[in-house]
Amino acid sequence: MPSRPPPRQTLTIADVREVLSVGCQVLDACLRGGVRCGDITEFVGESTAGKTQLCLQLLLTLQSQYSGGANALYIHTEGHYPGRRLQELAVVRRDALAAIGEPGSNNSFSIDHIFVEAIQTPDELLDFLKDRLPSLLHTSTKPLKLLIIDSIAALFRTEYDNTTAELGRRTKVLFQVASQLKKFAEREGAAVVIINQVVDFFEAADKDFQGQSQIGNLESMETSGRRVAPALGLAWSNCISTRIFLSRVGQVMTLDTKREGETAGSNKVEEPKSVVRRRMQVVFSPCLPPQSRNFVVTTLGLQGLRPAS
Image (tube, rainbow, N blue to C red; front, top):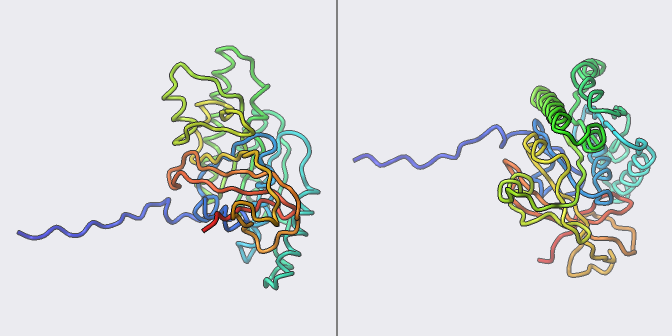
C-alpha cells in the first residue's frame, strides 16, 4: 500500500504581504516585521498611550524602506496636525543614525512625501475616500503605501444621537468607510492604520460574545489601572483585520538603570530620566500570535524594551 505524501505547508496571501516597519526592532518583532500592507490595522489606547507618536514614527520610517520614495497620507480629525513634532522627530532620528555611521542617514526620515488632510465629519471622510483619494493617487508617480486616520472615534463619538435610528445610521457609515479603506488597501497594496480611542468598560449582558469580539484572547484591557474597551463597539471591531492595544502600565522606570533587566531596543538612549512604561499588545489578528512588548517614549520616539534573557 503506497505511503501518504508528507504534509505540505500552504503559503497564504497573508504570508507574503509587505510590512511597514514602525521604526523599532523590538516592536517590529511583536508585529512580525511591522504593519501589514493590504490590511486595516487599528492601534487603540488612551490619550497618552503613544498612538500619535507611533503614527509619526511610521510616516518617517516609510521613506527609508523605499529607495525610490513612497507617499503617505495622514488624516487628522481633531486638534492640529503635529507637524512640528514630526520635524523634530525626523531631525533627532536622523542625527542618531549619523552618530553611529549609518549609511544614507541624510536621506532618511524625509517629510517631503507626506500628504496631510483635515477631516471634520464622517460624511466628509466618506466623500474624501470615494472622490478625492483616487485623484490624489494620480498626482504623483510614487506609490501611496500608508494611510493613517488619527482618530476614527473623534469623528463618530459626537456626530450621532443615542437613538436607534441614529445608531443605525452610524453603523451604516462605519461600514461604508471600512469598505472604502479595504478596497484602497487591497488595490494599492498599502497599509491602512486607524487610531481608535477607549471608553470605560461595562459588563455586557452577552459577556462572552462581546468580550471575545473586542478584546480577543486578552482577559481584559487595562490601562492606567482601569478597565477599558475600544470605542465604536462591535460594529467597528468587525471592520478591522488587526487590533493592537497600547496601554500605560503605570510603572515608572529610569532608562539608564536598566530596571528589571530591561534595556532599550534602540542603539542610542539619551534621556537618563524617569519615564512611564507602556505596553503594546496584540488583541486579535489573522497573522499575529497574542504577544506583547513593553516600550517607552523618548525624544527618539517609541523604543521597545528587551526583556532580560
